[in-house]
Length: 281
Image (cartoon, rainbow, N blue to C red; front, side, top):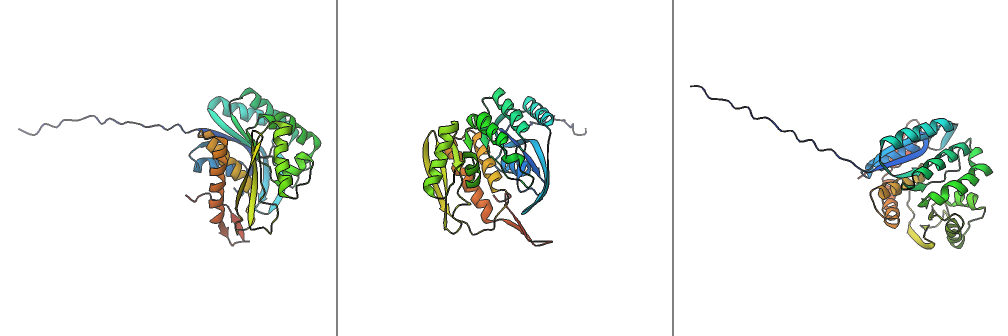
């Protein structure tokens, strides 16, 4: 008699992951160095699923910007509605909001979702950026968004514009950081990378709940890399999405950014261009 063959059904067990979700609300930079492209790449490197809402399209490459067009308020609102009804967003960050109307749309959105942890990178500069620095635009950021954020991450020049003060010393950096808490009720990380370029050390000032901490590190011998502010705020947002507290999120994000800056990408053709190496483990 021949052998009897038994067919044993194969049980396939499917494992589905459900990583935390972070949202980037920012412009599109086709060079990949900043905006939603850089944000979502940073989220992914941190093990966080990134979703995005476009506020503008920018024609740029590192060191060059040739044009910007803002997305209409209605389309920003439609994007926010689609994303928020489909994904369980834990944390979010804003970058270039481009127009006062977009600030209003974004502020209305976060008022409806008070549990989303919000990081604001207050981008105020673009080649076609008069609207970004208008009194109306900055006033709406102060009145409607800053108080909703768990952290605002201005560089020195942005802090000067927002606060209407000069920052020329470490003492004035401390004063500026505290003013974000006193005036708007938000924590702030005032970044000192553009301050005192001849110093061998950089110092950022972090204010949380009215108390400040100086975060010092050696200045890296690297080119002026495009998108460091976007990447840092995205890395902080990713850590918040994973449940870390704010202080730990800032420290981890700074360490990650420095690692990526040290091993930056570089291409020689058609002109020398560098970029943050977010592919580095």
